[in-house]
Image (cartoon, rainbow, N blue to C red; front, side, top):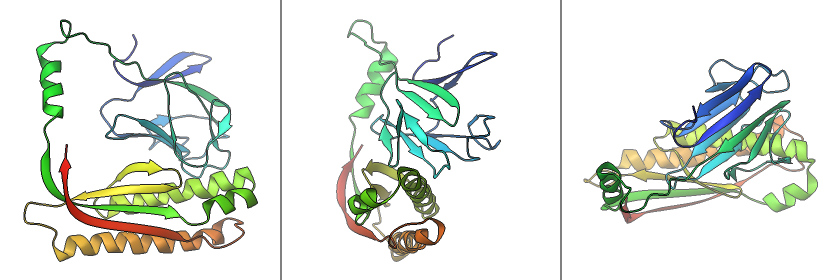
Length: 238
């Protein structure tokens, strides 16, 4: 039976296996048993890649610094890439296919529940938020000087560590913008207290320190730096 909503298909010698991409906002792929999709392929890293759904409904493939890389339609990815319906994904010697069917509902066919969900989705609140954007400086220069394998492994590691740091300080990656990540903190009705803002600054500091250490793990031509922009103000939040 075909799953409702987005899913990936894995063809094996014993048959077809499907993983529904519903109910979570990220699904990890790798050899380790703690992954959502465990693939017993010796060419795959223990924690190889991640498929993440953003609030916009878009799905991204993020390589987690794997040794042998992640590929979409035969092209190796180094920064997070948006997935399209029918894309072929390759991890090690294992191939999967991503499907994201779109429901086409006419006004007559839509159920009351679906109409109610659409109406709910249009509701917004004015909230105080903090938006943090962090990007890798001189990334274009780096891509010209690095072998594709080293670039993919090192930048994949950066995105994985960045996600872990942002999560540890109370947010999550809200958007990927090329070589940058954007995170959002939604504050309470009483405003942003000193402790909340301190957490965001600590996240920025840890991101900078993590980035500065990457050249000790990978043969990079120069130590990496990040630029960061932080803004706190009121916004209409859906």
